[in-house]
Length: 359
Image (cartoon, rainbow, N blue to C red; front, side):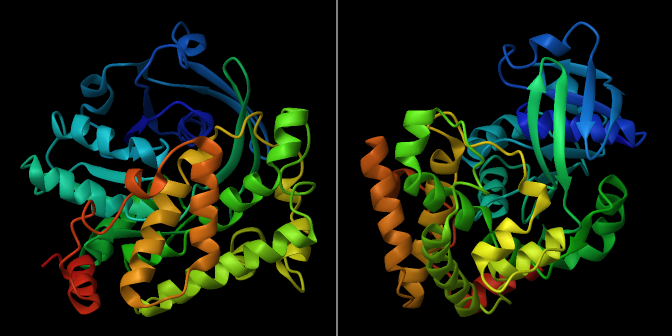
């Protein structure tokens, strides 16, 4: 299958390489040339870790139109704060029937793409799908090299609207057999486990990160019992918002079992049982997507929905406010909200009908 990958960070390079190794015809686009400069000459990526091999890509470059031309699927693998700009740029060159898959959408990614495509008059051309999380735990390990620490067992995904799941899923699952069908994009958006694991843990390890410049294992050393208790409290708030939307909530501990086959009597034990996290180092700076993406593009919209639904999100709100103070930013203003997602005038019933029927 002809596939375009948008974004050449850790995930984009890993996904491009694995898809090519699985026999697909893959193009890789990145906004700037700096990140892809080691790949431009030979268009090769070496993969090490759980998956190993060498991949040759068809195209690597900064021309989006060229990258997506003729592609059956467009895999968007950029931080969610870049989704709006990517959607606007894709709207200029999207082809009839192309499937856009957000890997992942974080919270509201598919709704944001949907709104922008409608405003640009191209919504009827494209199919929009959203994954709950990214399928790999991976890092760029050197020029033209990626390490995959673990491939998740299963990643829920849904089309917007979900009435198209049955016709689109066979194509999506051919690309990534790890994808499993979710009820709708409310499920993928609000069962967003990165929002639980990333912001709280990085803030509670800010001193260590700034002192050691990330020289410790983020999950296995950074998530102590006390940090895990905060994450559990945050997770319960997320689950309550999810349930109020009429969606089945998957708790963080349950998700670790689902994605990685690990168990534990509490979240701390489950995280520390996950061999897939071994070797994943902390970010070298707190100015990292764990805050810059997961706070405004995950926690802020969750909190906004929670406020409308009467859910107490005091832990979530505290993390958002502390992250803003640490970064000198107003994430409440910068983040996704009901207006920016185009759902501010919808009831829960109307929103459910929209994500399932498209009306």
